[in-house]
Structures are given as structure tokens and as C-alpha cells.
Length: 281
Image (cartoon, rainbow, N blue to C red; front, side, top):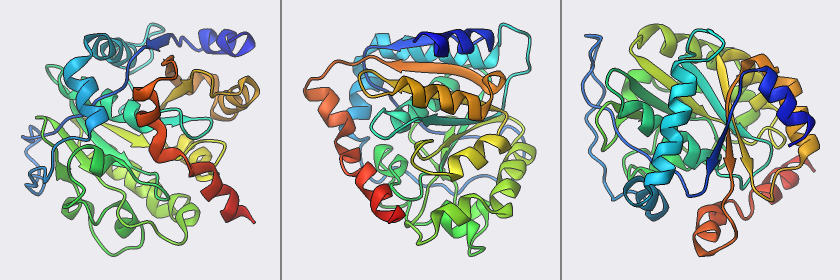
């Protein structure tokens, strides 16, 4: 990736070559002794794409274990970040699937818990991916509007030690909500209340939504998703410059070639750019 790769190397970032897809999981017990999450059993099976990666692709699972190790044990001696934003420069690069797979890899470790937060308020996807679409009707948007408390919104997934804060119904003012002081308070509260958890924020594409830049300032670390044949080098470099190379803890190079599975993976984002473009007019 030329100069971009050089900038990432200086930040201690390695490339994870993801030949397959991504996967997801659940969280059960609460080792911290704090109030337990609402018990919400998955209402549906995992989404087909996620199930294929989680159960059928050993190579993809190993790639995410490598990424987990990069985050838990940074080579430059930095402390492991417990609040992590996953983003991409543009839509269709697989950031949501990467978010779920990273959470799954962390939750399947010996001592770590993972809490996923769906911050893509315009096009939420994590609850359906994890089979929680029917019970994940309320979520982050409700909290940011002051209509619900966090403890009433977090759902358990089907994999132990993994849980989800869904997006909730798409609001009319997603940028304002995610850029609000209440969002910053959420990041701090999740960090302080759940000391045994790594909190992973699935954010909107960086170049498509200004609120992702705001969120990147509130978290401790960032994971970038770079799509094969989809990422513009100049946009990726601009994203790294805006976030700060020192804050980037990992890069997932989504190197899938065009095939049926690739089309299935990104079909839900086919109108993503049109949505954002229409909103700017």
C-alpha cells in the first residue's frame, strides 16, 4: 500500500490477510459481579455469511486470532485498548463482519469478554447477523435520546462471554446523536462499568459519515478494514492521518476475490453510498 503501509508500520500495525469472511458470538456470565445483562436468547440462527465463517473457515478464524493478539499484546509495549472502533474508508469493505469476528475471537479467549456496540445508526446490521433481530428492536439510538438505560439494552449472544448493544431503530439525526456528549459518556461508562470487557464499536464508514471521526477521538484504539479492489489509497491515507497512526492497532486487509460469497457479503451495502449521498443534498 505504498506510503500508507509505511505509515501503518511506524504505528506498529500489521496487515491481517483475510482470504475468507468474518464471524460472531455471545456473552454469558458477568465476572465483575455487577448487574447481569437481560437474558435474550437468539431468536434466529446466525446470518448465513457469518455462520459460514465462524464454522467453516479455519483460516479466517486464525486471522482474527492474530488480530486479537495484536490488540491484547501490542509489540511496542502500549497498553491494550479496551475501547476499539472498527471502521473502513468507504462502504462495502466488510467492517461489520470484521467487528463481529473480532469480538468472537476475543470472547473465545481464556479471560476476555467482548461487548459489541452497533454505532452504524443509518444501516444497522449486527443484531440480524447474530440472530437477535427480533429482540434487538431498541438500542443505542434509544439511549442517546435519553429514552433508555444501557443495562436495559444490552443483549446476550449465542456465544459465551459476548454481548451486543444493538443500534435500535434508525433515527432522523444519527450524526447529531453520535457526536453528542451522551455518546462520549457512553464510551466512558462502558469502559468504567465493565472492567472485564473489550468494547468494540462498529462505526459508519469513515469517509461517508463525519461522526466516525468524532468517535475515533473517544476510543483508545482503532482497527481499519481495507477492502480488496474497493479502497482508494488516498482515502485510506487521509483516514489514517485524521485518526492518527499511533491510534491504529490493526489493519484487516479483506482480500476476497469477486465470487458468489463476496457478493453475498456486501449485498446489504449495495445502496449504502446512495443513502449518504442523498442525505447530503
